[in-house]
Every structure is written in C-alpha cells, then in structure tokens.
Amino acid sequence: MKNNPSLKGLLVAVVVFVGAFAVYNFLLAKKNYYVVDNPTPNTYYYKINNGDEGIVSAGQFVHVDLKKGKNSIKVFDKNKKMLYDSAFEVNKIRGLINIAHKDYYINDQYYGYNLKKDSLLLALDKIKIDGKEYYGGAKHFNKLYTEDFYYNVDEDYDQLIKNIQKVESRSKIFRKQDYLNYYKEYYKF
Image (cartoon, rainbow, N blue to C red; front, side, top):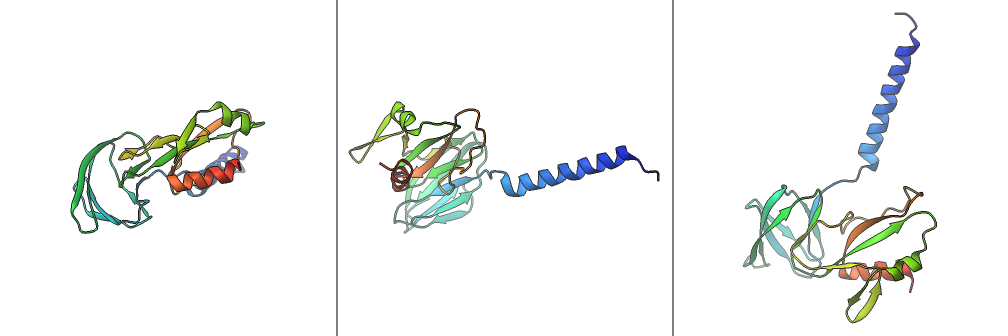
C-alpha cells in the first residue's frame, strides 16, 4: 500500500472523534434518571406501574425506571398498609417522586462572566420558609411528582462556568433543610 496522506488524516480524525466521544460519554455526560425520595424518618414501600415492590428507607433516595406518559404508584407504610394510590405524567428525562409529600425547593443558580450575585438576588422574588423571607426566587414544591429541574437531589451544581459570554441558569431541587443549608453557605447572609 502506498503512503497516502489523505488516508492517514482520515484515520487520525476517526481516532480523535472516537476518543472525544468516549471521554464525553463516560466522564462528562449527565446521566438522566428518576428518583423516589424520602426525606422523613419513616420507611415506605411502593409499587410503580404494578411492578416489583420497592423500599425507600428514612432519609434515602432510590433510582427508578419510569416510562414516558402515564405512570402509577402505590405507597405503603412500614406495616405495608396502603397510604395512597396515585397517577402522574412523565414528559421529561429526569424527575423526582416525592413519596412523603414533603417540602422541596427548586432553585436557579446563575452562571456567567461579571455576574452581580447580590443585585440579581434582590431582583428575584422572595419566598417565606418557616416565617423567614429568603431571596432568590426559589419555587416551593410538595406534590407527588416534578420534573421542573436540571439537577436532582443527589447532584451538585456545576462548579465551572461553561459559557462566559452570557448569563445562564441551572435549576436544582433541594429537600427543605438542604436548601436552607445551601442558601446559608452560598449567599453567606
């Protein structure tokens, strides 16, 4: 076979492409999944879409498989007495089932070059938690299911600014106490 620079260039490009794809897929890609979360001291049993019985212990979360469209869940207490039987609609690629109907907060964190965190915080709505006002426009949530966030309860915000040309935001869902801890740490009031 003759020395063909075009063929060598093509092979190098293919190797670089495969390498970049592997790095992204295994190290950088955000995993999409659904979570059943239990921030209470109680243990719950559940069945999703009449499937196998699952258990979520006190303060734990469990990754579950859901299908797009209508889903159903039956929730039982620690004595396996049925608490409720409900349905919910799945439209996105990640979501949270609030099995105990406790308080969660969905917060937007802003990224960008020359971001003035204090003035941005004051421009957003306030929310009242346990009689105290908090800035930042977090949204309260206590229903069975939500998918209106980017980062789940078991994920952290990105530490790096990905696009410094404009201000962007990412939302994360927090348990109530986790949100209060985050607010105190991040805003340092």
